[in-house]
Image (cartoon, rainbow, N blue to C red; front, side, top):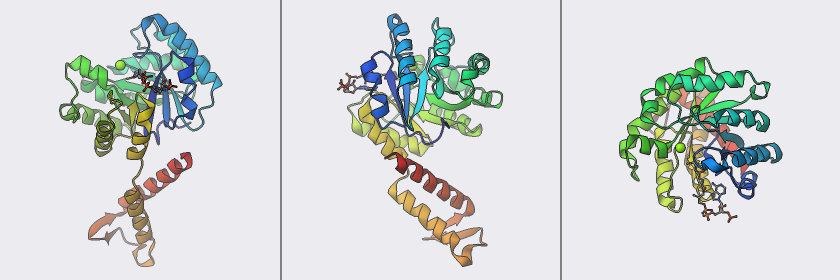
Length: 292
Ligand code: COA
Ligand code: MG
């Protein structure tokens, strides 16, 4: 499974209650992140590990990406979480609190020894000032560790570690988010935005999703099922974008334009690079439509 594309919505599910985990395959999230880390108290780490393993082995998630967030390298649970992942076989392991390339290499070396992990991706969480400063080195890891496919912004830890309360408009956070996006794009990784804690505030979530789209995020991590529909809507190509793309493809297909590198559409310059983008957008819209 390609774990990086078409992920508009990635829902965290604390791996503590089997009853809640059973909802995963019925929710419209593009990815389900079964969480063994921050949403699970120390006393129930083992229970959560077992519940997540059972869910991943027994449930059919269909098109949804199955991700497992393990505890970080420096914790006492890390080794057992990785071992359980070899049984559970998620599509991606989400490594929290990545601060350096070494954190990713340590997990990658363990995974390289396990045949079960052959197709398993690593998603690296960037959620501290050190990750901001090391974003380049973290993303560059993909050159030695091709299973690294995606960065996940961890906004709650970022706020805590930096002593920066996150405002509704996220103005002061934007430079850090953009540096994560630059690092991801420079090395061909995808990137998911951090969560919006106020799950009852639909307007705030929509605003954050629109901001994420404007920044170039691929999708958003979520904490509550009520957030899925908005993220899916905002991160999908809009009806007007689909219409524009159709016009671009049709215009370049006209016989008089076939040999042209650039055309004019509604007073706007459109180049062949825009044709490529239009084709990609239409293909993505088709793939997403199949899910609905
Ligand atoms: N995944 C799946 N189902 C969820 C869910 C989630 N993340 N969050 C809530 N639900 C379910 C509830 O189980 C409940 O189902 P029910 O009606 O069958 O009992 C339903 O959605 C409505 O939930 P609600 O009562 O509105 O919220 P809650 O009090 O049960 O849970 C939270 C609120 C914040 C505790 C919960 O959403 C949560 O744990 N979110 C994820 C937290 C997390 O993973 N954090 C780490 C990453 S930042
Ligand atoms: Mg965290």
